[in-house]
Every structure is written in C-alpha cells, then in structure tokens.
Image 1 (spheres, helix red, strand yellow):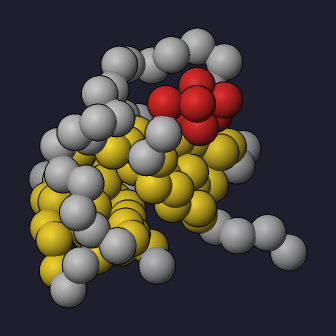
Image 2 (cartoon, helix red, strand yellow):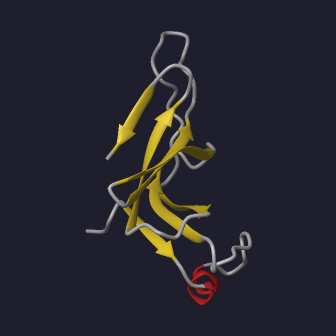
Length: 117
C-alpha cells in the first residue's frame, strides 16, 4: 500500500535543494515557504493550475485544479487516462506563520467537476 498523496512544507533552502534535481524556481526562505504536493495521477496529459489558497485554523489549504478532457458527442466524459504517474505541484507562499498545509486536487473542465479525496 502506498499513499495517494504527500504534502511537504519546505522552510529551509537545503531541504528544497535536495528535493528536486533541477531548481524549479527561487525562493527566499527568510520570508517565504514552499509547499510541495506529490500525487498519483492517471490524467498526466492535462495541465494543473493553482486554485484557491486559504489559511484556516493555522492550516494552509491549497486547491489544485486539474484540467480534464471534454465530453463526447453523447455527453459522456472522454476517456483519456495514462499509466499512474507521480506528479509534483509546488507553491511558493509569502507567509511563514502557519502550522501545516494540505492540498487537494479538483478535476474539472467546463462540463464536469469532481473531487478526489
């Protein structure tokens, strides 16, 4: 058994540098943190983008929107899955004063929205 997802709050430059082979962006860890969300995805051919970010009860909640294929001519969703792949989504946050973070993915297009959690 393996976890579907992992959320990591990175508060130190050394930890960030050790997480990825190539630096994906710069962060000033004196004033910022980076939240990295790893998740298993079977829709690897579709982009993800940042949705809502809210601080609630000292927990930073991050919504990741995942684009999906549209509908077929008969109204059913197109099936466009891939082999399971681990994806990472990183968010640089200009806020250091929170206890933890959690993320979730919402799969959407103009025709349907669903949440996997």
